[in-house]
Image (tube, rainbow, N blue to C red):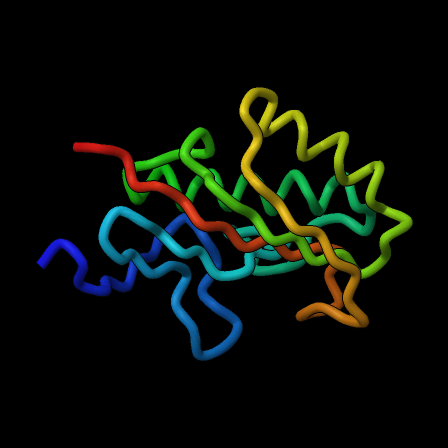
Length: 131
């Protein structure tokens, strides 16, 4: 039964803006859906610059992982979607502060448009902490 699919969520994150789960656990892995810069208190987008939005996204990811019994140290892979690759350097500066040592594998791509016209979306694959 250890490999049974489980839907996971945190009340500290805004609800999904579509028909998807915040995260799915399967075995010892957690697959997190794309997280955007939405304030969990107001359900509105935070900031109009890449630094502010990146912080909110990674704070939301951190809260989700904490509530699910793991953390940023266990992130294995992220996929980052940027609306403008010109933001790459400024995004990296913020991202690095969250993953200072042993950063996860990562792909970063520029996309034409993101949900609610945000500047960034991040999805993650995470190892669940050993209980």
